[in-house]
Length: 276
Image: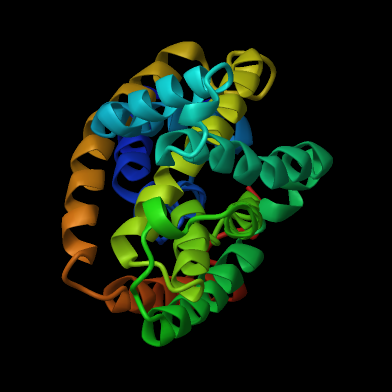
């Protein structure tokens, strides 16, 4: 069972890593393994992500309100259907479909085999290399308001679904897709955060039923970790968007590779078990 200290640390880890392209689920898995704690599981990870998602809802509250209100009104007012906010509503829906389908289809794999630390270490490295390639070949010129389309939204959606495997990173996968499509770094990240809202909320709310049941953590530590992830996550998303407006993703690429190699080495040498 997760205690109060574990809840504080894992909440901090979730808040710090959710919006960076380094995989929050991988860090929760790795930190737990090195601390000698039992794997907190997919349910705990999904629920505390509600905290960081609340940070996104507050940080982008004006854009989100405009998207929801304009999209809703466009259902009855044809003149609004060409507005960027109305189109964005449909693009978020379309981009959410891949992870919704795959999340349900692969539920059993997500809860066990996908959390193997050998796989986590490998995905950290592989997707670091892909992110580096995308970052150094992207023309960094397209914007969401003018260029986002249904085909691009679907590509983003499938990239987001890769994050079902810890180590890929939800923001890392979708930002990489955006860069490969030639979107500006800031726009790729912004759409990544908006696209995550339905998926994270649905996943977190769905997993609430398992908290406090069987091997899942108790309600108290889970709530504490969620609150901490919200506070830290709000600061992290603000910093990240400022950072990538003037920097490439090289720092995160190097970090992912080093961490991935260390995790694989630690498992190979028996320092930590591959399965929690």
